[in-house]
Image (tube, one colour):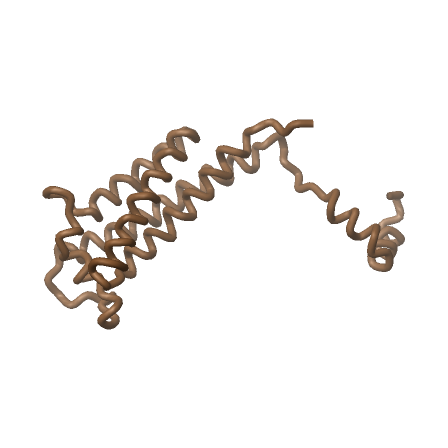
Amino acid sequence: MGLNVRAEARTLQTDPILRLRWIRDFKFPDFGGLVGFLIMRYLIALLALVGVVVASLALHVHYSTETEPCSINEKWDCGIVNHSPYAVIGPVPVAAIGIAGYAALFVLALARRKRIVLAAVVVGLGFSLYLTHIEKDVLLVWCVYCVSSLGIISLMTLAALAWQLSGRKKAV
């Protein structure tokens, strides 16, 4: 395309074949992979902080005897989930394990440990899916914090995968 931007814009508006080629050939600036590298690293760290907050709220419910604000109806009750036998592994509450896991992911993301982050989020996703199975099929009650944590770890898994793939060289 030439230097006349208005003529090019008019041509793109009127010529559908040229428009499709422009869309097909458009590439976001990559700056050598730096942008994707930085965005994914900080996105994972931010999601880990949100995960710490959500897991902390679940831990509060675990130790609380009051009526919880997330006790919505008979299908959504964090108290039932967090006071069940599945809410602990030995003497350790699952929410405390979540806090530790999210905190570790925060540190690993900021330390640029892409492979370890990817492995850790896949393990976290698997554990979260197991706990979701317990909620759905055993307890028959959902926890808002647990479902939120599943969403967070799912997003972190996608971001870690994108981060891992962002540094790869493309075949010519």
